[in-house]
Length: 514
Image (cartoon, rainbow, N blue to C red; front, side):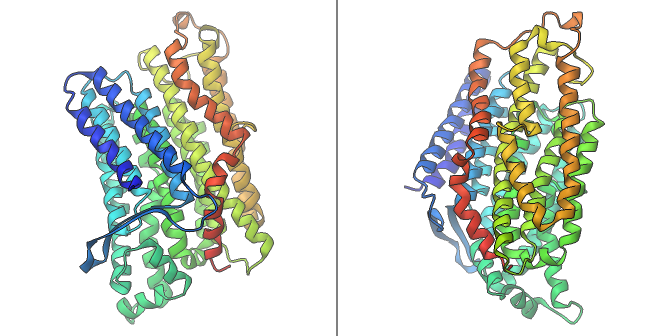
């Protein structure tokens, strides 16, 4: 049974049917939610049949596509791919629920959401670069139009900026992989990683493309820089981040939930699936600058969040901060340690923390933007930090449940946001002590702006204007209940997730020459 092909095609079928609903927004919403939940159910079936202990790629599908160019239709997943599929399958229904109020061109909106989900599934399952790159680029199209057509007043600028940044990064990455293909005649991620392990990849590149103008390591670093830029923009890593606050704040909150919950994880996935296995020797050569960029991403983004008054911009910068921890751990894992067994164990912890952080941040951030969508609906579009005050008196259930999501973002022990950050710091500190120590500043500033939100929006005297602020309805409580339950479940028992990818983590780390 070609489970992965079916999973990728399912949202496309849903998008077509949703688009055919015409001017029936209620039917469009119900169909979109139904297909997204069907995709979640199929992903859970895949997870149940996934062999946790196996080190081989599973659910493989491999067919010749364009043999002359070594382009294959190759799908497979390991623990990393499965985790990203689960995240995408969970986040998209949250994004649809957060967009439930959309009436304007609803059929088109929800069709684009399902197309974006299909692209996410494709990115997380394809193992041939051209096949993978097709989905990578196609994902830009629905995201662009979701921002452009349903965004805020500055939606055109935000959508254009998003498009330009991601396209520049994609072009740089494409050029790097074309160079690798000319030298190796392969677009296969797994084969290229094996060539790197055997120390054959860059010698082949130099013998094919090298000239007297380029030393071996200079050419290798140039190819690394191209691939790095593509993923750094998508995460994003400072200073390639300036598109994100505008895109997240101008997009509809339901779209933002998907962008931050799942689409930003394409960058983290690329670092782990492509950049680290294929370019780790180059990462070791420029490790110190990479670590400084990770520290800047963590610390500067929290300072930027502290200066914002728009809730969506606050959590846009908060997303950059949380993904900065993932980059810190990835760069730490690339460090040369000379085969020290104790430090190898710390690398396992750092990468496991990265995977947990990616998943848990996606779930938490999507839930927070869902709450912001509910807040906007009740307030007529207001979402400023100083627009409210005392809402806990008018809407105690809303306040309590959103508070849980905020504390998860803060990293409170017992909630899902804690364990990933803990493992990242545990693993990274012995490997890159100075960078990890500086990054701890980000934790403290995060606590300040999260607690500030709780104080300014929900505490204090209730303004007369909000005396009739509606609490969550029974339907909204039931819809939010699974997301809140997962925040607790993955916080109290993270082994549920770790079991899926621990073997993959060990295999990934062991591929690196210490």
